[in-house]
Image (cartoon, rainbow, N blue to C red; front, side, top):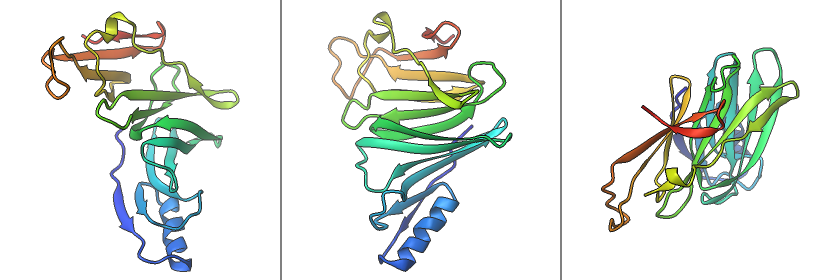
Length: 199
């Protein structure tokens, strides 16, 4: 499921008018707010996704740095169940999806991130449905052999119900901005609990 587009809104004044605008943006996800007061419950960036019997809203609190902090979210199932999520993050959220990755006929919430700095190292969190609501699923890191030539710049995507990860491959003498080893392409196998090469 693709992330909805975000739009920017600058609040020129604080006080009651600005608070009304901010609260309205929370009620209508996919808004980017700049400088809207100091209430930590207000969202700076909100993502909204839906599909396969669930919907989710995810946001970054307005007072947090873009380079590090937390994200918070609400996952709602068509059955009426609701789960709140709070997690640490390093960098910015780059993608949010709802897709059945495990084959259990329930969608997982996928949150991709990219660290600040020239490396733009990627990370991904996956939340699955349980009898208690939802919990984070284990996503193993790349193996030592899979990291050969790896220097970050990850891109995550969801294709045909599969979590896909790609990154440029650096050869020994490549400068940071000019990888020449092609592109590594992996997909995550939940049954095997590891990244496998994508054909």
